Image 1: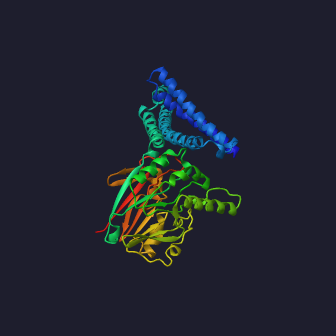
Image 2: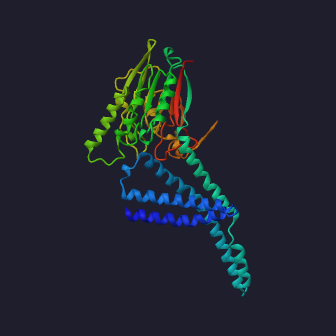
Image 3: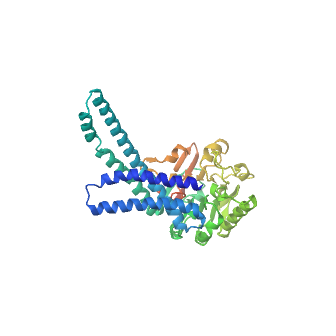
Length: 420
């Protein structure tokens, strides 16, 4: 472990020495004071990267203050990614110049003279303004956007309204308001204010029902403790219902034994129920209004991807169910919809999922959306329809890993059911 970290530190320093040449060249036209500032800032951030890696070896990462743990790691990632862009253009420039110099030297040597080749060397060795400055500009774009994503994007909460119009909606539920939230990952927040603002925003929408589609925590039930009293404030006429996501099971923690892991999950289940949430563990509920009803089904995490578990059983969840004219499924992983729901459960009309976070990075414009996650998940954000069945993938309310969002913003989804 120590040798790997030391090697990484040496590699970072060598890369920075190389990339620094581009910064020196790019800021050469500026006054000396600006050049000094850039040099100090560059090497200060380089030292930060090395210090974070070394601290991770000589201290217990879990004992770090939460803000330091979340943002120092993120900054290392942002800096390395940004320098990668500069490095690519710098290497391209040096390979090009080296090839030009070698070709000129061979020409001069073949001609039997040395003066021409030396003259060419002096002119060719000068760095290409275009390549270096392009590398600096492109390197600054991910740096600025990812930093902005941490400062602003992670908390730029959006309410997306989906009007679901179908004759399957019972007349008694015409105008029914259902709110979906997902992927809170409360363990990633360094303070409670963002969660409190989200709860206040949800309650202000005056929903008839609230559903949560998994990943309440990152790893352990203890992460929920500072947020439990806030999430308990969620109010809806027909209550709050939830399902489990892959992170809720504690699969990404090294437990001493299975008993400890099981106890952690049981605590999380108990804490949700203490908040007044009705956690559906392969179960269904009947939601009644104006003499009619819809069915709400909740399944434990079930994924068609091998790296994620299949805990849930939709057959168990629908055992002895009396299907309504309109039936809603809470299933964390959207791959479950195409993998099982569409094939074997035609009575499920709306499946609500999360899980993908939209990769927390992408582009969303009217009529167009793109994110790297679409190469892994066919359905990754928004509403999808196959015949009479629908899937909605919520973009998530929190974040995981990178503590920010760029382009794909945190979401509260408001479904307005309309009978036509």
